[in-house]
Length: 330
Image (cartoon, rainbow, N blue to C red):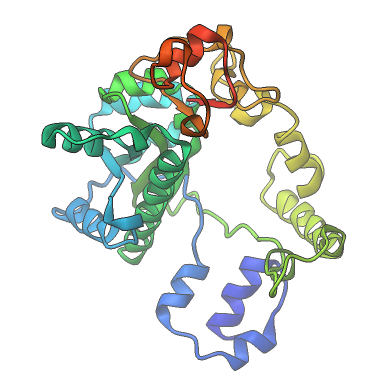
């Protein structure tokens, strides 16, 4: 078995000999196929200059309209990593890794720039800009991950940074308009606790050609994947009772289940973030006042009539009048 065959088998849980034999593989492709989530790290510090190189790689990612609507906070202080780990369901690898990066959707820099120039910045209030900032942050972070893995480092994303966004914002002193999208642990993997490559869905489940095929056509691939993941869960002795389909369905059952791992004993499940996405949308009375960790985006507000008295439509106006069409609170 050549190296490509080995990596493909690990990634899909089965042999893909034809693809491995026919394609002109290179080291970069093989490295991409080898990605895995590392949750056990050595205490060794990273070499001098590593962070600067990773940020240069991150800044080399694509960014919409060159607006660069992301930032990142590098955390090495053990006490701060401890506090952030508590806010992220007590995940020990946040405390353990020598470098923890918190990737931010950052609209504050653009707003400050426009205000400094005396120019309008109302476009930042639209959901489109928030989506753009999240995409920018994700693209930059993935570039950093690829760079880190090329240096022999391990990584794992921490989505639980979104569990308690206001407390994370306070800990990192984020200004209004900046949101922690996810964290990223970096460090040298502990060889005593090796991480396995988790199989993915068969390519035919995610690859659509020309148009999106009926969802029913994906069912054979998903059933095949369920068998692959049952075997993987058992091999890795993971606490997953059945297969990918049931595990994933439980994960999307409701707002509370979207949080992921349960928080420490005695702490409530932080459902406020996801509850804002429930249909029907929040009423005006349910929308809290904005603060450092909470922002309101109004969709299509400029296409709707002004508020009472002719003032421009704003989140505050909608809150007073009860004229809420759709809001995303985070």
